[in-house]
Image 1 (cartoon, each protein chain N blue to C red):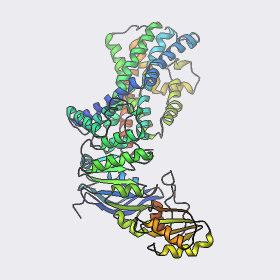
Image 2 (cartoon, each protein chain N blue to C red; image 1 turned 90 degrees about the vertical axis):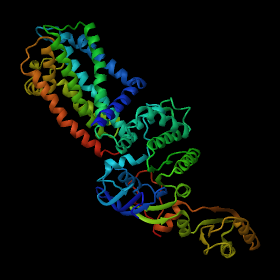
Image 3 (cartoon, chains in turn orange, blue; image 1 turned 30 degrees about the vertical axis):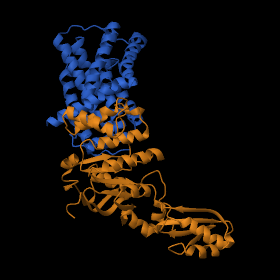
Image 4 (tube, rainbow over the protein chains, first blue to last red; image 1 turned 180 degrees about the horizontal axis):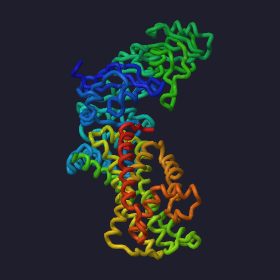
Length: 327
Length: 255
């Protein structure tokens, strides 16, 4: 345990009356990618801010790369890289100048800072934009530059706080590919995200947090198994057929199918052939189908399952625990 | 220690690089003081009596004090923007000096203030300003005093910037709290002409001390105790506001 790259024990933090972290524990093995998954206001950013020495915890301990985040803060800063939610780049500097500045602030000799900047611009596909001020960059380019800045010093531990929030789907996909290729280099990565799909794709292990508590932990498969893997959704033409539909789909599903209005929901574990199988069975049972689809579990499904409430898409952090849906 | 200096220089260079790329800032730096000089010399000047002196000679030391004090405003705007954009988070997560971001700001302000002085003197001389009854040494001492005062204000504005949630807030704090202070002083008119109450306030106002000190060095007015009191004020402001700003920097969070 002690040689883990990130060790968090009983970490607490409050802002006034709001308890952002209520004593959380988690750990990340060296070279692994840990996904911190949760809705807005869950405490993800607070955890990252504590682990990157930006904020002092009220209680508990955290060690990163073997160093205490409070007592050894100064030494720790030479071992971490941070790419935050805001794409923290200087808009009036060019891409090259931004990376050169960060290199110099890590006390690399100037020639080395420049060489490293060129290398990163190449890796992050920003060579053409290198001499343009960052204010002319697209959102995706800014995030790439921000991530490049976090990697200037080849930090052994990298923190990515919602690296794709606010990006369009195409830029998000590009960002995932970039992160994947970077994390192959052996850094330990802590990634926060609101998207299960993102944690699923990038993280080796996932810690789910909600209202400052860890509510689940495991690999993405383990979490999905808890939620029930994928879900077949069949919208019926006629609600009168529901019993026949549930009976027909029971043979395909892993658990007893549920009815929600005109929709039958059937948890399934295997993916291939399920739709064809279901259509045949429903057809022979004489059930009319309006629509049929196979859906991966979403963050909402995980939350609904684990907490009984939805992971509401609330844009403001700290302001969400108002409407809880009872299970 | 040496990393303090090198980090500060890296950040000062960053601040100066953006000046030509944000021309609006450069315009504020050059046009605004010019407007003030022209406005006061030609619009109000005729109605203001400064016995023994041409108004332009009385005005220029005061207006230079006011303009240079506000030179540090660039620091307030820049820092509040850096906080908002998350750049301060990045800097605080780097193994760099804790004071460098602020020291880099205030240091680049000194260079900007030198630029500002060149513009102010050019306009001043064009409007008829003359040094009176002075020596090269006294003129230089006046310049040093003005730049030191500007440096002290940069630290005040650093604190303003770190407490502001946006550049707009920084702007309104600067112009509602500090700007009026320059008017309730001898910057534009002799304090002796003011009504009771305001006059005592103006006489205690450090802007009066600075303006009168620079006048005594540049246009030969009686020095009283103003020159050394001016340096005391500068030192006191730096000693109070620099640690406050650094302490705030250590805690400041994005948004």
